[in-house]
Structures are given as structure tokens and as C-alpha cells.
Image (cartoon, rainbow, N blue to C red):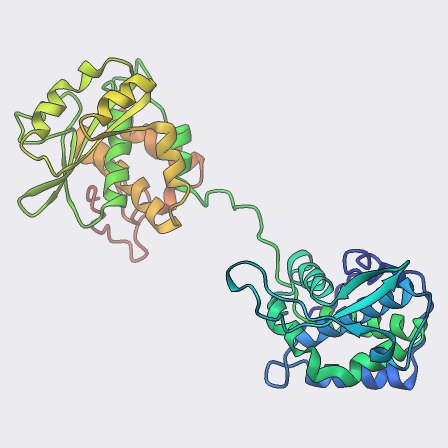
Length: 397
């Protein structure tokens, strides 16, 4: 059941429920009102008719208020003598099949107006399930309103009630719906919940620090591939190393047995000239089935189109960020650690390594690294609990 917080008021939602005529009306909690609400409470269980009965009877009240109001009456003891029923037929693909629901015909100024229960039921469901997040309440309008014929006794009772009794009944039904558990709203993402996105957005090259141009983006591309394609054997080298001479297709290759399944060329600048891909295209000639990417800072539309003619997908840093936002935390954490792995094992730039680790510390991401991670022979970033430095996959203490 719901917690003890103040529950939403019926009058605040009456218009949305199509029960606006009841607002401000004095409730009359008579014996038949209490008996009806108690009966619905007992039956409103998944094993005994379902919670749909709450909304269905709210729809009965809406229909009674509308139909009786149109003819200037407050109640009627002879429902089907007062109003005719109309059979409504399906339109479209199943045209001609009768709809199993209640539709009353109300004479108004020489014309006929239809008053049904499907619309009010759907309105009740939208408020209770959608706006007020009682997800244990069913949303199956067609199935629910088909059950009207098995509830004709309570339907007739509602039409025979005084306006005050209908108000009291509506309040009772509202209370039954509000007793269902309210689902918590999704909270804003916690800080650090997207660690690799944080790295992609905030960790950039810095000139004048002895770091090779392009090393940062190549490290990020390596981390991205290691996390996104964990079954591949990923090969790379430090920036400016010749891919062809070292037996690679791109700057980062993903191999599956003897086959190059994935090849990534990394360019840490804006690309406008398709000639930048000449060597990469030539290397791909031996591996026509390899998935090919060009990771870059940015690219013109003309460059993207030219690359696509060679089945090369251009991925900008901004697009990497968009993709990583959809990753679960564990996958992002893998990318963060593997990026450091590239800086340690391949680029081997102490200034870049320490700057990256400092960035992780400043953004409360250091805990994503293995517990005994060390940097270029320094003390462990986080010693193992037993005091022994363990193999971190990067370096040993």
C-alpha cells in the first residue's frame, strides 16, 4: 500500500477524471454508498475481478452525471427505460463487428447524443497510472469496459443515487485507487554515474607538456573499442607509429582469430580533405569485410560522405559522447580503465599518465581503476586491503 504522505485530493483531479460536476458537492455517505464501495474494495483484487472495477465504476458515475444532466434529472430508478442503449460497431479493418461496451442514447433538443464509459475509463487510467504513478492499476480499457454487463446491478444503483451519494461514491473509489503504491519518480542522474562520458567531455590534450599530438584521442578510442567490443583482441601502438609497418590496418585494430574484424583510424583534428584517409583505405583493401571507423575531433559533411563511399564510418568526439551515454556503468568503467591502460602500456608518457589519473581523482572516478593500480613505478593509487600490491593489469607496485 502507499506510504503515509498526504494523498492527492479528488477535487484537484475531478475535471481530468471527467467528474468535474462533482466538485464542491456535499458528499452523502449513506449505507448503500458504503456497501457499494466495500463491495468494490473486496472485488478489486487481481484474483477477484481486478482493480479495473475501480475505474469502471468511476466511469459509471461519469456517465450518470453526463446523461442525467443532459435531461435535467438528478437520478433515475429505471435506467434502461430512461435511456436506450446503442450498439457501436468497429470501423476500419474489422468493420461491422459490434463493440462490447456501454453506450447510452440521450435525447437532446430533438437530437441524439451518445454517452459512453470508455472515454471516462481511459481518463481515470491516465490520471491514476500516468499522472499519479499507481502502476498497479490496469490500463486495459477495452477489456475493462467490456465487463460492464456483469455489473449492471451496481450500474443501476449509481444512476439511482442522489448527486451527493455519487459524490461520496466517487471519493470512496478515489481512495481505493490512491491506496495503491505510488512508484517513485526517476531521480536525476548521480554525479559520476557516466564516468566515460565525463572523461570524453573533459579530458583534452594540453600542449607544451611533452605529450604527443593525438595521444589523448587515440587512448580514448582504444578505451572505447576495448569496452564496446570486449571479445576482440585489440592491437594498437603509440601515436605516429606506422600501422602498415607494424602489421595493423588502422591505429586501433580489433582482431577475431586471424581476421581483422574492426579497424579504427584516429585523427585528432577536424577533417575536411578525404585524402587524409588514403593510407587507411589502402590498408583496408586486404580486409574488405572489416568494420571501419575514423575517429576524429570533427568532420565536414563532404568528408563524411566521401568516407562513406569507402564504407568508413566517421565518428566524432561528440558522437562518441552520445553513444557512451547509453552505456551501463560497468561498460563505462571498463573504458575509463582501458584508456589508462593505453597511456601506460603503449604511449608511456608519464606526464599524460599522471594528468589522466589526476583528472579521475578530481572527478571522483579513481575508484573505477583496479585496486592496486600504479603509475610508472610509483606507489599504488589504492593499495590492496591486505597490504600486498596486486597485479592491476597496468603495472605492479
